[in-house]
Every structure is written in C-alpha cells, then in structure tokens.
Figure (cartoon, rainbow, N blue to C red):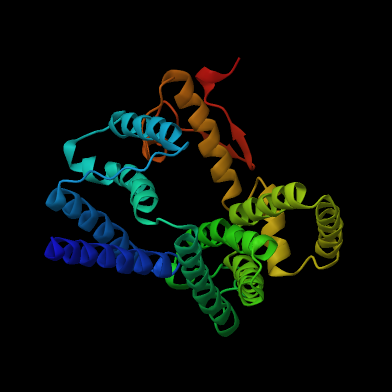
Length: 311
C-alpha cells in the first residue's frame, strides 16, 4: 500500500514538474511548452491506467468545451483532402486537452496562482528579449516587427496580448505587494514588447481587454483610459513619421501592405460560405482562395468582385 502511495506521488510530482515547464516556457518556446504539456498529459493517462482510477473533476465549463471540441472535430474532417493531413488537422483539437489536464491536476487556488505566476515569468522573459531585439536591431527602423524567440511577430503579439490580462487581474485582486509589483513590471514590459511586435490585431485585442477590464472593475479607470486613448490619438496625429503610428494607420490603408490581402481573404471567405454553409474545414480558406471560383482581383487598391457575383 505504501509502495503504491509513493509511486502515485512520483506520478503527481512528474506531472507538476512538466506543467511547470509548460507554464514557464509557454511564451518563450513552442517546443519546450509542448514537451511540458504533452509529457504531463501522457503521464496523467499512464497514472490513471496504472491505478485504475479515472479522474474527472466536474465544472460548469464541461458542456461548452465539449460542444466546442465536437464542432472542432467536425471542422477537422470537413474539407480533408487526404489522410496525410489528418495529424496536422488534429492539432487544434489536441490543444483542448489542456483543460482536463489542468482541472484535474491543479487542485488548489494557491497552486493555480503559482502556475499563473510562472506564466507571467515566461511573458516577462519574452518581453525582455523582444525589447532587446527591438533596440539592438534595425527591424523597427525598417518597419518590421520583432517576434522574439517566436520569430513570427503575430504569434508573439497574440501570446502577449492574451497572457497580459492575467497581470491586470493580479494587480487588481492580489493582496501581496511583491506579486502586485511584479505583475505591474510584467504589464509595463509586456505592453512595450507588444508595441514592438507591430502586430495590429494584438494591439486592438489588448485595448479591448483593458477597456472591458476597466469597465467591470472600476468605471473611473475606464473613463481615464478613454482620455488616454484620446491623447494617444492626438499624439499619433502629431507624430506621423513614427513607425508605430505608420503601422497603426496602415490598418485603414486598403491600397498597400497586408490590409488589401486581408479584405480579399474576407470576401473570398464570404463567397465560400455562400457555397458551403457548413464551412470548408480548418486552414482551408487560404488553400481554396486561389481556385478560379473564388479568385478575386485587386484594381487600384479596390477589391473587384468576380463577374458572376455581380448583381
């Protein structure tokens, strides 16, 4: 009996160590975070098989996540060209496994806080790397974003914008002064790093997170943020030659950069939806966009609909 308890403790400690690796590297290294995530998940499965004890802690999120998983699974098979693509298509669904892994192996609020703090450490490390690269390289001067260890600026921006919300929560709700101070430092460094990525979508999403957070936590803070946004808009009007201002303004430029391409993809997506009400499957919009049926042309920066689609 004691031997079984000791062995089970080894399993639990291994899961904790791998989860710590996942949270500590989630914003710095995709490879290391996947080792932590999948390693912890498979050890958890082996533990349940070994001790013949199925673990599942019920929560209100079970049904919504189950429905989302089923819909994602359906999307995996819609538009699947061949079985060789199956493994890659299952990847989005495999990420859902983090939910049962975390719910059943993080058994206290204190443990959850520690893992989130590790996640903030990961964001802080990535932010420092991005800021250092932004200062020491010519990427920003050339109008290019900085992606840090992720290389892809959009990926880095999305991770920062998503996780920085936790630093806001810690600042607002945590009583420990050191945790508040560290969270504030992460928020400051992460915001600057987010700016350096030049990822416009991540900028907008982070502004929405801050606005919603301020609206629910403190109305006065919300109004202060509105005033700051007004000042930011004024500053953007004055500093027209700044790389960040040029990037923000490019969002509304439908004749250059990636914006016309995005509009083209959205319009093609609408055409695809018209012909395929159930969708065409994960990652298939781009693959199908060059088919004659959906191919659109750009003329003088204005998207011209395909002739058969004109009224």
